[in-house]
Amino acid sequence: MSARRALIVRGGWEGHRPVEATDLFVPFLEREGFAVRIEESNEVYADAQVMDETDLIVQCVTMSTISDQALKGLRSAVERGTGLAGWHGGIADSYRNSSDYLQLIGGQFATHPSKRPDERRGDETDNFLRYRVEVTDLGRTHGIMAGIDDFTLDTEQYWVLADDLNDVLATTTHPVQPYHPWHRPVASPAVWTRLWGAGRIFVATPGHSPSVLGDVNVRTIVERGMLWTSRTASE
Image (cartoon, rainbow, N blue to C red; front, side, top):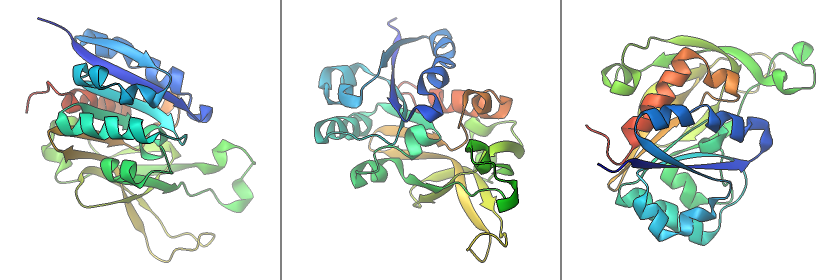
């Protein structure tokens, strides 16, 4: 029996440490029977032969750009059944120049609210908040979230613009604060899946750094999400 094939595509903004973050999951994928290929450029998506042989794409590319040919290859591969999975800005804040990519993923990073002005130090921790990830009713019936209750993180809390084609497995709520301009709490999807043609998509918004990915809940969700998304996953 031939191994399943996983393609890790990483790069973009270095602040999300794409090499270290994706390296965390290579041993897991190999234990699960995947032959893992790693690419530092998304141009691999334009290679139809590679895409046809790939069961799972794990993308960790924050911002950056994507060519028309690569995007067409990615969308076509997912539509034909290749799974696409990722976390945080590596999938939900990729390729801001492309509305077609946004439609494929179903959610786009808008902001991560900051701490109170008097608590800010001028570094990335200005945007680290203590917040809850809350499992939805749908999430409680889904294998990705099995046995996971609501949990708390201290990291960036993503505000995501999304559509209702997503199956939302967990949410997070941005509270009203006197130093922010919104006037009522705003709920954002924190974990979702999406069906696209014959393919499956998985997104988790926690994952700013390897330490966040090391949280037992986050890591379990991401690992299960990758397996669920793979072309050869069982129902």
